[in-house]
Length: 70
Image 1 (cartoon, rainbow, N blue to C red):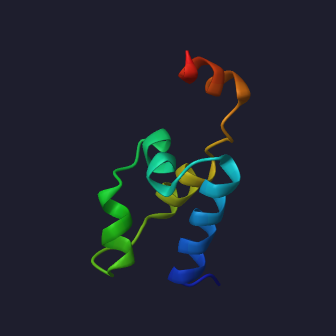
Image 2 (cartoon, rainbow, N blue to C red):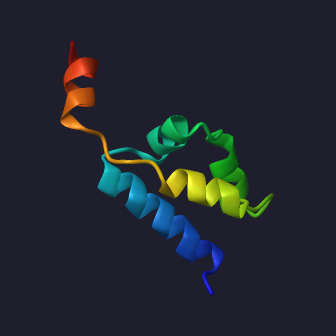
């Protein structure tokens, strides 16, 4: 079973692997970044649905990078 720190590390690694900061990953997933701090400080815990939503974000594509740079 994963503990909170394992989940946080998994989210951080996924963000990095996708080419996002954690804040960027949350933005793309449509999840409030304030939740990250609440989770890290033990104020609340992420739901399974929210974790899945974050981990379903796909990597930044070169098309998106080109469009963003234009």
